Length: 297
Ligand SMILES: Nc1ncnc2c1ncn2[C@@H]1O[C@H](COP(=O)(O)OP(=O)(O)OP(=O)(O)O)[C@@H](O)[C@H]1O
Ligand SMILES: [Mg+2]
Image (cartoon, rainbow, N blue to C red; front, side, top):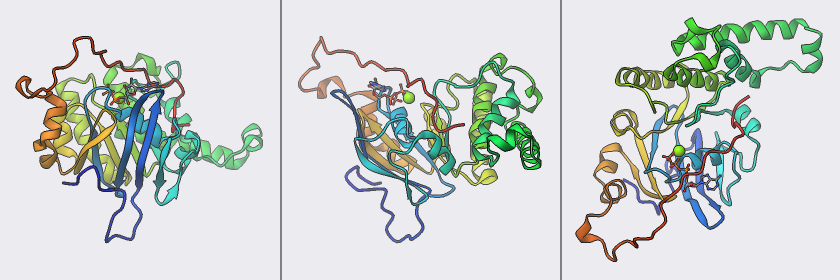
């Protein structure tokens, strides 16, 4: 178990750079410290969790990592390359992809075209080649289509390839989002509540799928999820944040038993509260995510 004061982005004894490293990332919205000195070292191929109560700052961490927000302080490295202040499109090309808590697809486009557009991050055809349909462009298009179909099959939505994305059941839309993210060929995949709104059977399938993605695609995964059973079962390491501050980080069991974590989730027992909370304390509000998609084509 590591305390929040230690810098987890430093990996003593290892020479290889982690797939993703965040060092003391901070971001404020006006007077609100949404993220405070967040650090993480995600090794290649690892599956780590990021948890915390509603409004803790989890999605904001993803928005910092993917370039939606520029950190007030701190560093982000993707496979040893500093990506602070880079645009989301640059970060996507550098190898980081994400899914969104509030699903973002091109609803009017077909399922296959949603994946194909995401794969465009990796194409080499410029405008000239595209306009004149050069052999390179035609070959690239064919390869993208084949690859997209493979991804849809892996995510078990291949049978819906020609349907409009918006017509898909909710669970399938979440799967399609992951297919889109994988189409950018990431080394790091950030999943923001991938089983939210799913039934028990869908959750079970998604759990197996997330685990299989690591081996199949060689990605490291950082998972935000409120389903504690799932997080505790599949994540190797878990970081817990509350009010933007890292309160625990370590193996699932240690995190689960950590008094600070229990307190953050359950609140302090009444007889330990001192002083009593103000009756007119403002409730925490959760602002929506920014409208612009990030880290994708
Ligand atoms: N663009 C923004 N402008 C102002 N405040 C914001 C913005 N985005 C997030 N916040 C605030 O930052 C805090 C962290 O929000 P965030 O969405 O990161 O939480 P979260 O941990 O993802 O919560 P949830 O589990 O509900 O998804 C919240 O208080 C939220 O209201
Ligand atoms: Mg969130």
